[in-house]
Image (cartoon, rainbow over the protein chains, first blue to last red):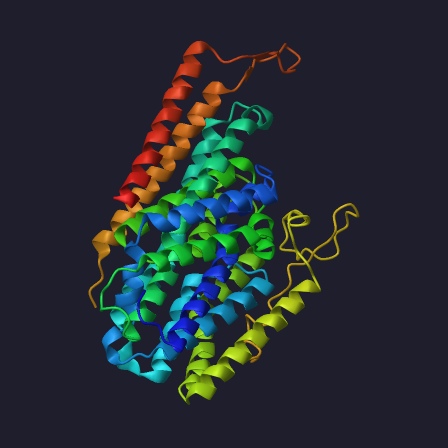
Length: 405
Length: 80
């Protein structure tokens, strides 16, 4: 094993924590529609997703190379402390959006964190703006659109082809289709997202001097990142699953199938070309596309709007938190320790807040159905369904989240 | 700034075509395998359900095999 200093060890652990949050944040992408239509039981779904994420993580290292060398300039004197600060920013933002039940991009949180920390520590020449635009911003806008269009077209087609069969007659078929396409998305997610953490850890090892520049990720990095994301996936971000599965549009099996197939193809096609795109944004785009594609489909645009707002805020918000953390960490060892303590405190606070309004596998499907008006799901008239509100993001609409760091 | 439109276009094109093709094929397969409801009597009620014919079933399996092949190819591309 390479020579590891303490700070690099801290960075590796923090990166794996981020990978873990990435796991449960993104479970919704593959499994939300499968769970919400009842194609699979919640626990079964996340177990399957976890295993496939693990497998996918081993399949490809294309995206990892983008992270290490594309956006941040390794030669510009970046220290592991900077990466640490970047990761802290990403983790805190991930947890805040998880608390609000909003599907936001873990990838953008990571990029934002790294960029913010690098800007504060090194300055503008530490980041490659072209790479950011080409590999992050453009795919961020294009990918959900592509996925949405593909899903809408596929939804329309599948309804038309199955028009002369009733829902009961095709139910088993669509269920099989949903399980298969959900499995594919999980696999695709594993190939795409675990790589980002591998790339970050490799970057830390390179900047800390333990690895030669432009190296491939070592095996232990691959294994640990794969395990972290699989574990996070299994624990399941139920709050986000609920938003994606029920909160955006009322998904029927044909729509779920189309949406997931669309997500899988977009993610796999991009991974193949080395584009680091946001699986969350692609899957959300697909779901909305499938909602639009069905005749008489209703999309809850208020929720969609809050979600897109969170997307736009992710890069800057994570960047701000990370920038603050980087400023502190640059002061010296005590700065790094302070950031670590504040980070842990923030995570604990958010977790405690989440227990007050618990969402888990037993109540993940309890949402009032989407009606014609854009109503919030509060005060359900039906006493049998526990009325649950998708909480308005307490922090996502502010300029910066409540500064707990 | 040098934007690689070709690559982006490729992703868009491939995704759109593959998604619609896969979903369409699979749906044809499902429809082929599912029972059909015969049009009912003059009062508009639904008739009895009939099982799919052998031809329909064979066609369905062909569709599913094509889907599986496409998926396998996709995975192979990643692993390569």
